[in-house]
Length: 199
Image (tube, rainbow, N blue to C red):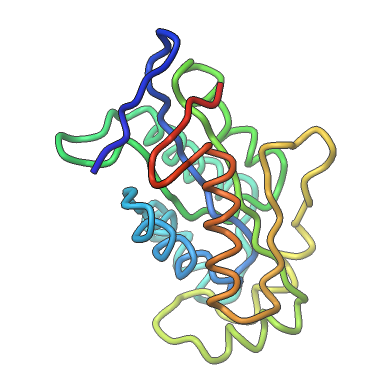
């Protein structure tokens, strides 16, 4: 199902939501749930990491800005790709996006295309909570050893980053899913499953 509504002669907007935050905050779980609820396309940002970066993180070695540059550019380039036939024009993507500089790279698509809106949801919890979650999850290369370094790198959005919504993930997962979906729907002007034009 796609949402192609237009109003006042404006083209339909295409939205890309980045679900962000430090390791073990639940980015993939929340993003997949959101995409399923809204029938949007979902992409796992970690799949864009080169093998060398995955190997570093699996050894609990934090990535440097240089390591992340190519990854962020790859995500940025993907923003510009037109949806395939039959796909939703809207996209949910995971990306830690810990620093403002990283988020600025991802914002460029929305600055270059009048019909594209880039927005962020940042999932946050205490380091102790995320370490416990990292210990119990299976099949992920990033372990609890990366939590501290990610919090050292973390730059919470300031007053000038009004396109970032912070959601506390200390509570129950289902409550977090509902909170994120509510905020996304409100930002997009969704009413009864459709969109109003938010410019």
